[in-house]
Image 1 (cartoon, rainbow, N blue to C red):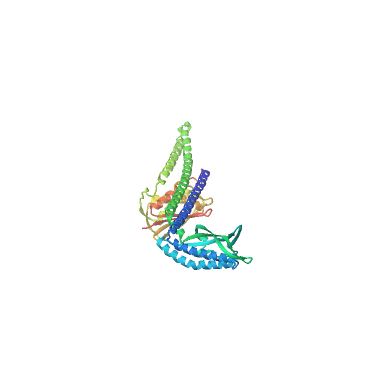
Image 2: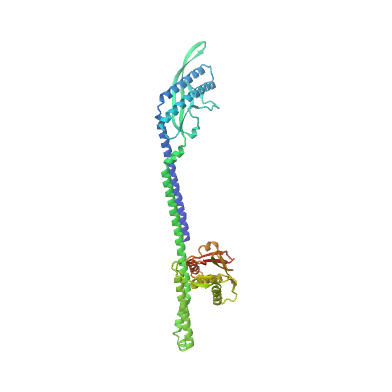
Length: 464
């Protein structure tokens, strides 16, 4: 049974992990789709910026300026480095106007968030017949932006790539002749946008999905926890009930066996004709009958909850009452080596409680102190008055109770001994009944114990 539950728990955890992974995967995909949709939405909005004529004018300026520099380069009047210096100096001056135009037009869109724009040159190549001459990029050249804000492309999103291809003429001298030649020019650039706080915007649009997923996840976790807890609880209840049935069966076997032998003996002619033997046999039958009745009464009475117990409270003197309980207990045990240390509070105190029920509750604790002791039992019975509470402290030198068992000690039918073990007789109702009686008196009971170091029960009952 234990192995099956373990397998079920492991399988449930794996299923929960799989479900969580699938949900995380779907949320991740949804996030990517939302991000792409948001970028596309922003790109489409920027396409509506009405400054294409101004931007085309700026493009024409730097393109014409670049061709002039390239013509000088082809005529061997400047170097590649000088071309780039002149080119980026020009675009930097034009970018001041571009930024101003862009910000003015962006305000008209009223997007609700800021968008930075950046256009970068990726390559400038001269194609002369079969020969290609790369002007940009050069080694160690870090400049690339021509228009827009300067931000890391990795932090932005690419929205466009373009190629400008044109044919240009240049004049150069060859063998004392002035010659006009042609070359092809290819310029590639990429446009990026950067939306500030775009993650918060995308997450905001996914808030309902996140919230719903979180609620569903918590619900599944809660359902899983409740199911496993209920399963374990039911398993424990089944084990306790099985243990109780085994214990009470064992308890009933002895008197029933004795009754069986006694009733058969009554049919024996020798016993029937002997008044003494007949009387002794009847006494045996009567005692075993009383024992059976007590077992049944113990099950019925001790199974009551504290709400069902009707207390018959009366005023008692603490010293007299508790001393009588201890004397009756010593007399009933007839244990030669039983040592009870009496530390009952000296000044007399009037208490109002149910004499019968409380005495039964205390006797249950005293009985356990003797039953669960592997050496000469020593019990300390102490009472003190503390903070308007009458405290009864019962300590023993028994085998003790482990910490994991202490929290179940007052449960119905619970016994520390496991399975069908009857070295110590009992039905697992004594301490449950004791706890119910103390609760019915509006009191509390607690335990302090360690294995092989004895046990201490502390009972607190309000005196008012």
